[in-house]
Each structure stands twice: as C-alpha cells, then as structure tokens.
Image (cartoon, rainbow, N blue to C red; front, top):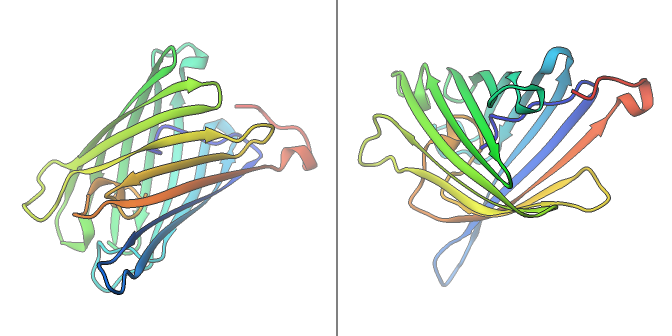
Length: 224
C-alpha cells in the first residue's frame, strides 16, 4: 500500500515497479507490467506526482495508464497523532475517473498496520462509481528488512473481479536512502484503481525507490 506515505519538502522521488509473468510452454513468453512514479514533496506535507503504467490491462484500448495525484499527510504518530493519516486526490486518464483515498496507519513496535478507503467516479471506464477498501501490515524483522503484505477489494465486485493481494520483503539498502521490494502480487499496476483489483495470475516483481533531496544542493529545507 502506498497511500500512507508523503514526501519531504525539497525531495523528488522516482519509484520504479516492475512485475512480470511467464506464459505457458513451449513459448514461455515473458509479459512485463511496469509502473513508474515521479513525485515531489512540497511544503505543508503535500506530495504531487504521477504514476505511469505502460501495460495496464484494466481499460480496453488504454494500455498506457496515467494517474495524476496530490497527497496531503494530515497527521502522523511522530507529531503526537494516534495514527498516520493521509488523503489523496487523483485523476486516472485511462479510466477518465476522479479517484480518492483516505489512508491511515499505526505502528505497534516493529509492526505497522495500514488501512484505506478508496472511491472512483468512473471505475475502469465502466460508466459507474465504485468504492474499495484495503488493508495491510509490515513487520520489521531487522533494522533494514521488513516483511509486508496487503489485500484490497472492490465493495461491489462481480465474478470476474478478484481480490487484489501482494506479499514480499522490503529492504532499506545500507548507507543509501534507496529502498527495494521483492514481492509477488496479482495486481498489475499500483495506481489507486490498479491496486484495487486482482487478476487470476500471480506476478513476480520488484520495486526500487530513489529519493533525490534537492535541498542538499539548493538550500536546506524542512525535514517534514
């Protein structure tokens, strides 16, 4: 789940997620589903950015899925709130849908629990509004390694729409600000809509995040 994090002022984030599956024999053709994120942290705990998926299967005729979003971290445990709380407003170009998410999370020692409620004005370009819920957890087993998993579902999904899930290991690369995730999932993309519906196939993948702190070169900004 990505909705509970927000950027720091003066930091630009490049996030690359790559999932793939191998076809049946004898061809065993490898099909790739990458999603890229470019986002920038703004003052007052805002984050703006865009997801771009080049092989999205959810909207017929629109394999290039764009999601433009703005996120605000309303409160956090580090500032005395009981939970981390964020809201996201987004527009999905492939679905022609205005989407939103309310996400919260709370840490209990090495465990962090997360939940989210999502809404879509035109889910998967089906001319109908829809809602979804999601939940997940991370368990930090070492200072730089955590296990993670999440599930999500549309509240009114039909027989062809499956529950979405993912599970894997998250790694903070030592001496760097970069993170790496190795995981399995049945969701093809990580947009709000893409992460809310599963397929009948397990995809294997990785995620790599590169934060670029511009304030290091153009003046010192806030750490929040």
